[in-house]
Length: 532
Image (cartoon, rainbow, N blue to C red; front, top):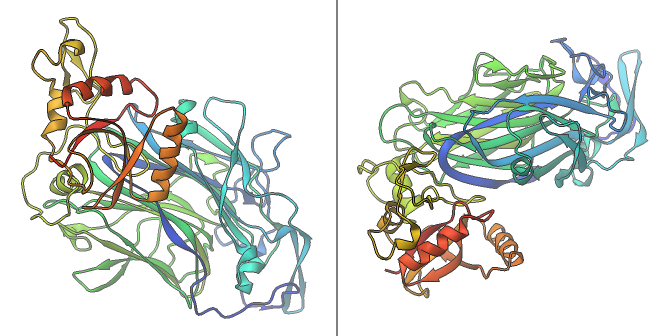
């Protein structure tokens, strides 16, 4: 803007230190699958029409709530459509909503060469409670969010004035219980400032999903959320680790990013990946994201604009959502056997509020077998030949299944699991008196964990976590089910295991495992060996 700014209710400071809330790891998965992300803006210049002016500046636009659901009980709403593979299983779903919310409404007045902004009405509505409508439903579910950040409480004056907030809710259980998958999702009652404010008001929401699919490659997934104020005086770096990429062939990696305040017409912001080969950060770009203007008020997936939403504004007025494949021709950015990727956010002119980033990459079968399955340190040569498990395993926030639940039929008909693996047809009641099922043999083939202080034997585990507080919450949940869950830590990787049964007789324990797997939350329980 070539106008001097006089802001009647704001006093701005020059920032030279980190602001916001440090990024925290939300989850970590190792499985055959992929991710999906959808979302939409919640502000525009009209309640239902798409905003398509490419050169519109956020702080020159009088913002009003988008409201497309034709429901008098909601004051704001927008929708987006999710498309999932037919046989995919949702393993994690995280819902985020964000906005600038210093108050209900702001005004703008131009006097000669000066622009004045004034806040007419202070905050009057809660912003951590929204409504979510699932596909093929006409009713809303109330979603109570966790407030990850509220700029009104920040010690930095500029953040107090813009008052951005970030709310989050894990809705995995809701989607599973409602059997929700592909279709249109509508989020309502996201609260933001209407009218004008310095820098422009901005708001939006996103749904990030990790799913399991037997046809997909084995990958590592992780996500972080928090709040980082990126400006010319403050950049942000994030390290992704706890993986080892494939030993040979193309290294395929993607990142997922979400932020507020990225003006379409203001250049100078960049997202970069550190190149070990060049020993410097290399700016990412695609057909719809530019090296010198990565955050450009758009919603994109790979090299395309994501338009399967209502309204489908091409300029989302400061709300950015992007899933980007990292260009890695000849593995120039990320080499074979890499165990870390560094990401950097920076800007030269625009200001950015980054609140979410996620990472995924195809991983080494050797790493998967040794570190994830066997729980050992990643200290072996990465080229050690290891067969990729035919069954899916993940760690942190979800169980780590060894294989499909066995069939209990006594018919002479070969049964197959969803992975296409034969299921033993013998009656489970005859396991002790006949050859062990292949399912149990596979479990017992894994190398044992070494955990000081634990009894030698076999344990039924139904969850593994990287963070102890998550393990404690799961343990409490199992106690409410009438069980006696026990937590232990594997010293090889510091993961927290929850086991629900123990025996020195693997065959007897396996019969109990079959019964456990009939219950909710136990479908993917498995047996591990300890100190054997």
